[in-house]
View 1 (tube, helix red, strand yellow):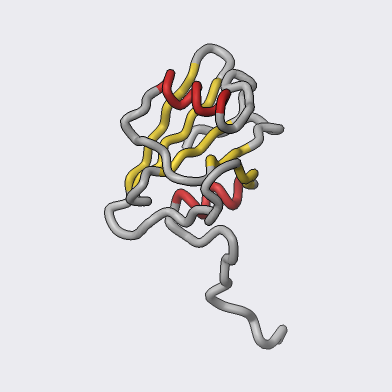
View 2 (spheres, rainbow, N blue to C red):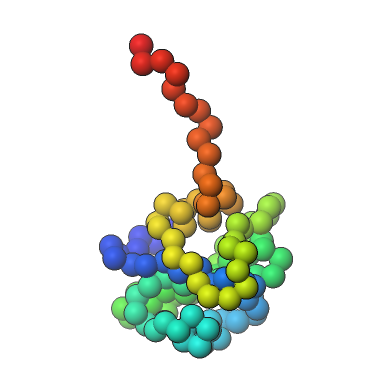
Length: 115
């Protein structure tokens, strides 16, 4: 993934988004639904109805970038709310894009003895 500058906030748009939308349609959603400025440098993440595809909108200072990812198996874990937004950390975004439940990550191994 493209390295985001420090201080970049990551916002998930709750609910399902029409994945036919492109730059202008998603920027309009950011302004109207999320009440944010799409040109502020934050990353906005949208999920389709089936849950296997996300689109990310980000202004890098020169123009809007539209990134998409589709999972071949499984679904992206998304908030249950139907409107509004949720802020994520970079680590949570990384888990989300890998198809991991970012809300409750579980460690697969825990050390038992120090020596």
